[in-house]
Amino acid sequence: MSVVIQKKDLLDAVQKAFPVVPSKGSLLILSNFKLSYSDSILEIVATDADHSLRVTVGASGEGPFDITVNARRFFDAVRVFPEGAITLSLDGMVMLMESASQKGFHKEAGADSSDFPGVPEIKDGVELSINGFVLREIIQKTSFAASKDETRPVLCGILWELSSDKTGMVATDGSRLGHSFVDINLPVEESLSKIVSRKSVETLMRITDSKDKDESLKVVIGERYISFSTPSFAMVSKLIEGQYPEYDRVIPKNNPKKIVADRVAMLETIGRAAILSSQKDRLVKLIFRTGDMEATVKNIETGGETKWNMPVEYSGEEHIMGFNGQFFMEILDTIKTEKVRFEVNTQISACLIFPEYADEKDKNSEDLFLLMPLRIG
Image (cartoon, rainbow, N blue to C red; front, side, top):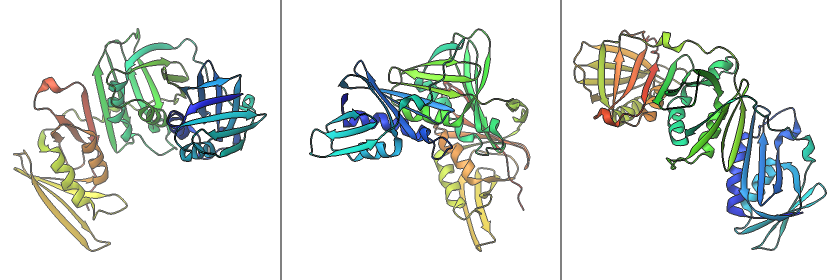
């Protein structure tokens, strides 16, 4: 029972699967990979009980091959193995790794794969195909705003809404919001809304090809689980249960003051000011005047002060607001247009941030970002 595979192919598969393995957990078996071989395909499975990822890669071999091994040690071993072919062979519950290009071996005790959790099956789910590049763009514009506070599990996820002619995602942690929708034809008879975990979309971003604009993803959406798959991987994740907040209610419908600015210049200006901001709230004060924006920070704790000015397109009365500089920069970094547009009202009302297109023909999605201001002392 042995399998021969090129190191670069095995390392690529292991790198994709490893982040799914939990860093800690009550079940020791979850710290393992399940390795199996049949019909010239080596399959590597990782799971944390809520997310299961199956990665497949071409190999050659003889007889059945089925074992679970410690994921961390296997990953580290593959990473440092010499380039070229690697032979994996089994002797009971012991796996031997040998290199074709250098004399030496690595031996690892494994465990019976029958104890490894199975990948959940989705029955009677909604099946559809979606362009992977489009989905990656939507995820990138929203997932950064998902909460990391595990006491609010619903906000730790990303709301995915689908209809027959549109799809998009929304994420918010209560202080910021990312919202991105595209017009697309989908085989969805009734509108769907599901909350997908942050780990699901982060894994999807990591294992899909960021440069392939034609990659197609098969998606199956069930009541409790969702799956994403291509010919080289399949991921099944548990959906987050609960009612997502009515995000439309927090999006202002009338922000009369509008500012247009160069995105990179604003990112750099806020970044310079944020260096002195408090570790507690990262407060940066922005003062908008006709044709000008001033970013300033005065840190009482350190006795530091900084002030930077840049030109903007604005012709209203002076307007002062305070923001978490780090959150502001994340939004600016997410947007890719040359210019951005800000719509504001009062010092304490939400600021809306939009990509500003030189030509509306370049616009292929409806993107909106929201940032709540901080109180200025």
